[in-house]
Image (cartoon, rainbow, N blue to C red; front, side, top):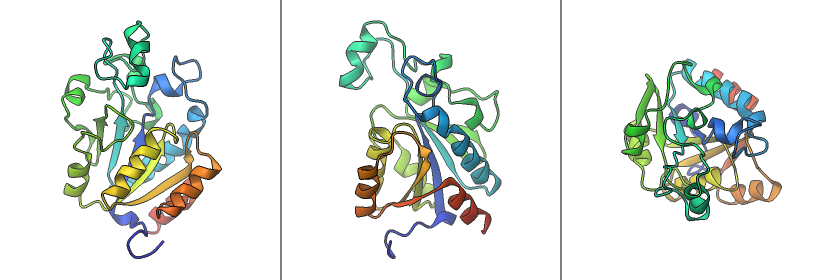
Length: 214
């Protein structure tokens, strides 16, 4: 860490990535191993960010049944009739523990239209069509408008969407932190890769302690 990469948590936003029921629940059709187990830590971080009025953005996927907005590697699967994170389905919903209120539901039409859906005073949901949360989304503009210079990454599943999002954030000169016990699929070489590009790795307890010291 140096003056260009050291996270500034007072100017940070928490990203939760793809922590949706179809990817998280143990009996879900596209469950990612380990994701259910990290939800309590993501929840603790979300509560801390809400308490201190720091921004949270929940990044989600929505697969249209005709496969037209789906990654090439999954398009045939969705076209065959398999339903995963289908708009307005229960499986597409963010895990209830991560919502500020259980009554909140994703507005699929607005999200698919590129809009940022408010979840609360300092909290939103945003749809992404590919691995990275910055790809063809308004995430960068949204964060810049909030004066955010640091992103804190959590969620599902490190080799794919969190990793892609981290590299996209680094390319845009955001300071980046990964909460290593609040992301599924993390492996040792991935940790080393991140350190080499100036990403800070810390635990849920460490980050909450830092936030509480504000």
